[in-house]
Image 1 (spheres, rainbow, N blue to C red):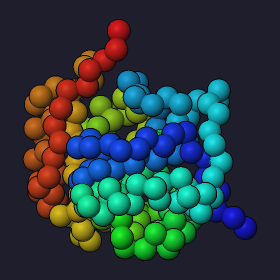
Image 2 (cartoon, rainbow, N blue to C red; image 1 turned 90 degrees about the horizontal axis):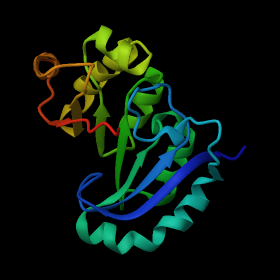
Image 3 (cartoon, rainbow, N blue to C red; image 1 turned 30 degrees about the horizontal axis):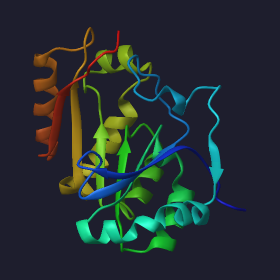
Image 4 (tube, one colour; image 1 turned 120 degrees about the vertical axis):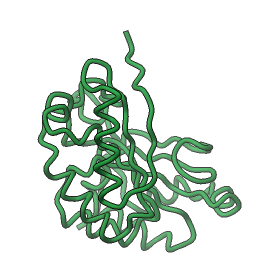
Length: 204
């Protein structure tokens, strides 16, 4: 059976926004969360029209940028949506590419533990959008519990803490600067040291 995946977008020649060097961002359809200020609602909208690609077809589309990846230390960043819902696809794509390109996952970690264990072996970096570690804030903002995400963070903390960047946003009407500091303190106690702190700019 072919490992098809639903792809909502491929953005080429990105610099400084999705990992080291020049990158291509591949967005998957499908997300377990329903964040109030979602930046990419097409990732779960029933009206979206994603393309269905095999790993080989995706490789054929992005291989033209291999020289840029190799010369800058860049590669492919997988986002969405939630890329770790597509581990069969990602593992096959990795087997085609090998170790020549850098692989980055932009993930909420609200996926099965087994998916994260598999992802550890193929990704060079994880950018984890944890929102907030406070369970009440997380539930109010995403509509889901953060238990799974926090358990998967513990898994990454034991296996590859240096490969993890954690996004800690200040979210209007949902958390405060004090909440962000509490999240950072908790995450540092787990062994993480790389953080991306910023303010969500809410569109009016």
